[in-house]
Length: 278
Length: 278
Image 1 (cartoon, chains in turn purple, brown):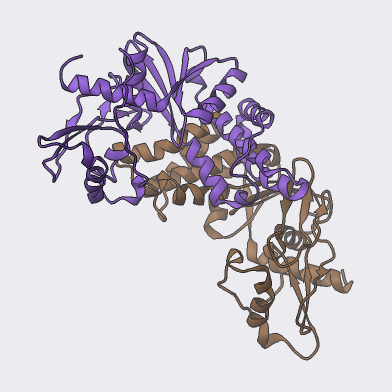
Image 2 (tube, each protein chain N blue to C red):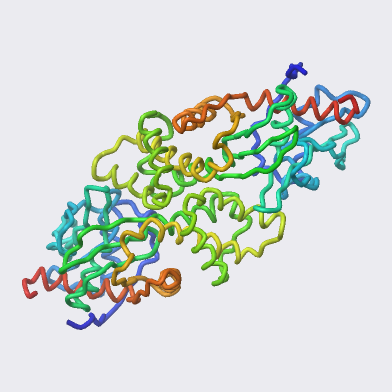
């Protein structure tokens, strides 16, 4: 199967957290009004559209299982659209959930049939996913992206951390340090502030150090996932490259696949599944 | 020496971060107007009154050194007050700073002459301080309190964590877990959310678990400080008790001293130092 080629594209700048559950349907209708015809237009959705705070709650499917379950038709007020939501995945022990990533995994497997290994999806909530024989065996979520944002925006570190700029050497040193002495994690954060006050540490350096500390902590904790495995990073641009760089430093090479492309391929696979053509 | 007995007390509800540097002096004058006489009234101040964003910057004193240096007279617009600020302490390697805690340490040593050991001051920015022969030898700051506030208010965990309630057993289990497998820290955070979504984990339980995870991470990283040492916790109420409980679980008993009382004793010591009577 080849990747999906979009015929048209529309994006909303509304954030999920800014929309009330009731606002999801009008926001969608507004966005796709030009595509809706006389018959109900099929819509397939994935991701946080379906989280507990939002539109409608489709039950999670328990791992081990294939990444894609049959998309579930949800109730809409408008008869112009037939909205189907791709179910998320859940794991009992340790407790974990995903919504949206299952679609990317399905897309990646559709484009790489027979692939076995570990998929890393870095971001706000990074996921590490063990895939074998076309099934998601187990997974683990890390709040690395959200932790970085929270520390650099809502704590005293905000005075010492730049919002842009990158120092690769500093980043890799911080990754190494975090991985070799993970028990020191809690001791490293405030030194980002102190090194600014006492030594005038450049703010982009502090940004790279914090990123290395947190990604290093993620790699230390996810080691049982990636050690000795075939690794694919499904992510976007710079973030995917940073993770690949940190993994390469540990002697663990990874291939990178574009997240948006994997999502589109996954949605296409879901559509075929719905129509019974896979 | 005995502890200081306050003759009068006044408190402002203004937060440091809400006051501009220019507002410090009028806020103070407003608060103590009833105590100011015809001659300049001596004022001794400590803590974040002197941080980089604020009133005036008194140089840090480098450790190893006695906790108290001579309070520094700062410039005021009003001639009715003579404001002296107690200098903070700094450490070169690893880079670290304190402002305010040095006064509590001085108060604790004034009330416990000849005491040697490690002082733990839990809070927004917890400090662990090695004290020997009346001097601060070294110290280490942990952002534990601020990390807890940031995670429980500004991340997805806010939906799953109560603002009150306590489960001591859960707390101690989380401390044990964090200390025995510190490399797993990053993997534990999101499970607080997933255990809510999948298992309806009570929100006070999640609060106790997060607290245990973060304090456990602090104790894992501060072990070189407290292991086999004489330990005093200088803190307030519940927070001090929680730390004492976590330390007791590691076979490390600690005595508790009240932070406000230690600050008053430290300010009294600083006043005597200024007048040359110590």
